[in-house]
Image (tube, rainbow, N blue to C red; front, side, top):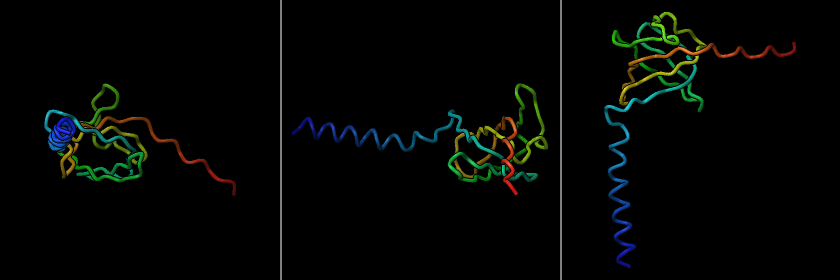
Length: 111
């Protein structure tokens, strides 16, 4: 019985530490998805799960297309992106936006 109690206590301690460690600095959190809208100061990205996230763009945000530097204006609706949001805490702020290929257009239905 003592071994079981010790195991449960250790498990509880590990779980208690796991929460704060999930969003620590030094670990890049990323969002992968498709751009649904872009403003001058933010971009909205739809994730594969269907969630749409608003991510702020600042003067410190870098945009890259492959290995080349790109501009915020190059972020187009329908473009796939990988966004580094730093520590992942709200508000979400993009450190880097990697541009991917344009999402394929929906096939035209029979009319």
